[in-house]
Image (tube, rainbow, N blue to C red; front, side, top):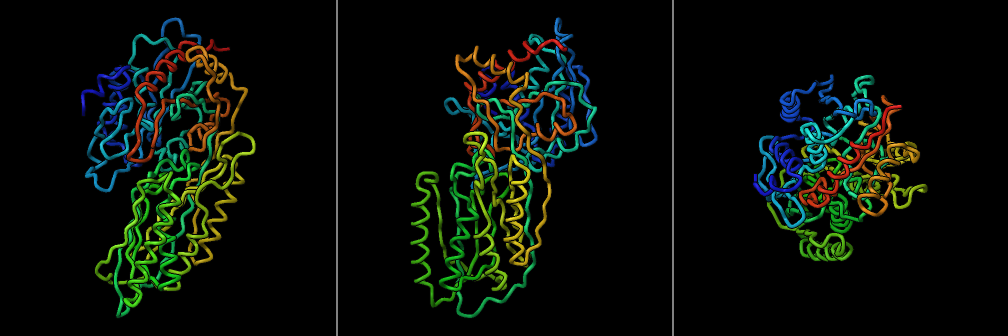
Length: 487
């Protein structure tokens, strides 16, 4: 790992981030990072333990003179989204993230950086390690599996935490103070189909959609970015309608919480339509690229002749699934009527896999309004059930209702104004922060979320601002020194 990362200021923050990023920490495979954090707490001589689900809690007594101040919880999640460019050779299960400095940004070489939520975790580690920062009694809560199911937060039992204020360090714009977030639900459609022999007189083609930006399926869903699964489906729909295209397999998208950047398909058409098919596809590709020329300038779509596949889909099932994907909503469904520029409800068609007689379509539906979340989920369910799919709902978690009268909000706004000579943006976000879930078992805990500026989270373009991280660290240290005396 480049020494230039460790020389950045504040060194305590970037050194802890570098140490953390040397440890593999994929969602649902956090064993190594759990041991890393436990060893860190034990090495400092602090009370360190796991709960039943394997969240890690580290307790640090108040610094001198702060014994009577309100105890707090500093919270972040240990796992990170694993995405890499198609040409990048990297094993997230065994390798540490390879970082480098690019102007004011820290980036990774062809992979996600892990600043979401690694910088928040590193900040908590730095507070625990410091001998000079003034602070009340601290409980550091490191949750697991935030990115693929909120498992740690959902299974944290009441009564474990003693703190009365929770600072969640998982927001990605440094001028924002977050007081609310969306809940979510996984909507998955599956079915089997009969495979058929490839008809005589057919030719095979591979279709590739790549070069898209991707990004966070909550925070970036309003940007009009391309979804590789929807773009691919447009091509397949047109090819089927006009030339009888038949599908052998599709592999689109990767993670449920990442906007799909790539999709690959193997198809056949009758040889008699070969020239017309290629011409028609090029026209559609030109149209799609024109539509996305501003938001997706690097979009690449290729149609390449290949060997014939061994099998193709049953034609009736194929027609139904193509139409269902076309009908299924993707993107913003409803904007909030109560908070300006806030996405209330959205869906991400995240993963489409069709192969060997099995179909799987994974969606992540988000909303800050529970009834709207279920309304959209039922719309998706209806579209996919109409083509014979079995649809399941799983992993539902609640949103976080904003509290504009929060005492900790008043404190943070005041400190931010003094440090920056301007007011922060008090917002709710369309991501799935853990505060709403944690609040179900800790309803009286005053919660707030903030963090450094991170762009491109959940994609290989993820990058963290160095100057913003310095601003964030200064903000956090001042907050800790001004936590009020307990009533």
